[in-house]
Image (cartoon, rainbow, N blue to C red; front, side):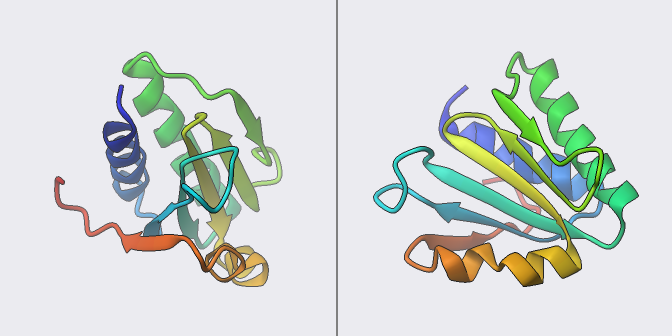
Length: 117
């Protein structure tokens, strides 16, 4: 699966579970360990886990499994590392606190609008 399809599937899976403010960040030239971040948020820990489950299930069905997963039990910030793309699913307050969009402001940011690319 190419990186663009991976990004699209992650965003769509998050959107299917009503994730808020889904953005992609192009990390190429900004960070050596990954090409893109997908960042989204939810209001509750249960919804954070549901979004992470949706992403994981969607990609697993396509034959792609994460290389690393963290934060699932707490449901405050779940990280799913797919190599070229790292998905970050936050509870809204934690997204505001950690402010990855500001921390990595050199990365080009694109808002996901729910329409196919």
